[in-house]
Length: 73
Image 1 (cartoon, helix red, strand yellow):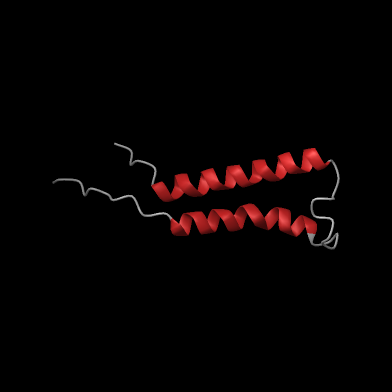
Image 2 (cartoon, helix red, strand yellow):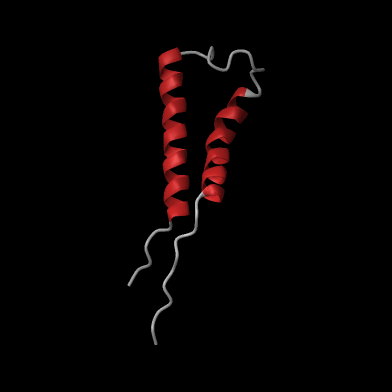
């Protein structure tokens, strides 16, 4: 029997999807780099790439482990 997906994995995946979706929506609404305009142009792609990864790490780290039941022998 396959093990259930841990809450940590679900949390990290959901958070990454939502942050990536938010960045995509804000980018399409702004239609230019005005969202990150105050930042230097070389730093903007770094922020866009690092933000989802940071959210994934933090949400996975903060979520509790899913308790596992040991198989009965």
